[in-house]
Length: 269
Image (cartoon, rainbow, N blue to C red; front, top):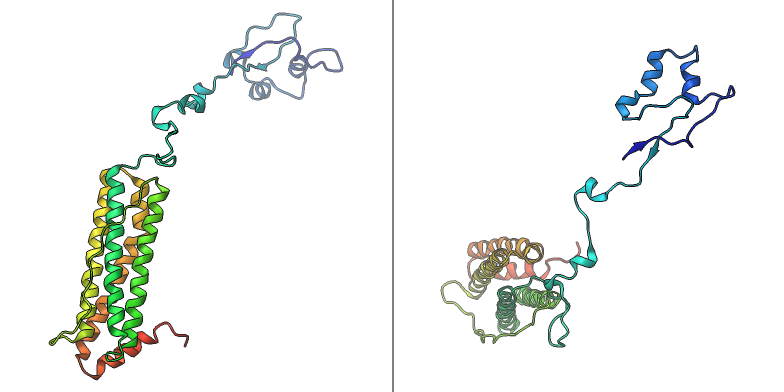
């Protein structure tokens, strides 16, 4: 802000003098009070007042925004950057930005992991739902687990499309259809298998997160943390408890009670 003298700011008093002259001549104000109310001309950088001329202050409009903030945002210049060009080819994504090929491939691999685990859980559902096995609680548990893994795969597919990648589904291995185990029994064997699969899935998610970090993809890292990692460790804890309980009850009548617990889990009290 620049201060300069103008002739149009004079405020006359009833005696015809200007305001400052009137204040200086007033007996109600001492020189010290006037000085505190009106800083000296040297402190403000005022020019010397000539006799017979009124004195005033005006603000210059020559303030430069860059001098105040140090930053000037010029959007119409910055959008000319090459990395912000909008593609015109119909086969190229319009939304893709800072999404590397490595991240895209890693997402597709994780989709395949989720579908494979879902397929195993679906096979376990089919096994425990047989008429000669008839453990309806375990069947319910593995059916819900299969659906959850499929939802995870679909969530990753949706994310792939959001970032402008291309979903590529890989082959799924055929899971076993028999889960009998002479020593452990089918219930404990199946639950231990589920625990191993959940831990394997967690390792794959951590690897996916590492790929995002290596490529400085903060948005992808946040997505994996928010949607998968916390839920995965909770699932591992839950299934670990089921394994411990089945080891206690053994292969006998206790398995039926455990199965009933799973069957009515979540029912209203």
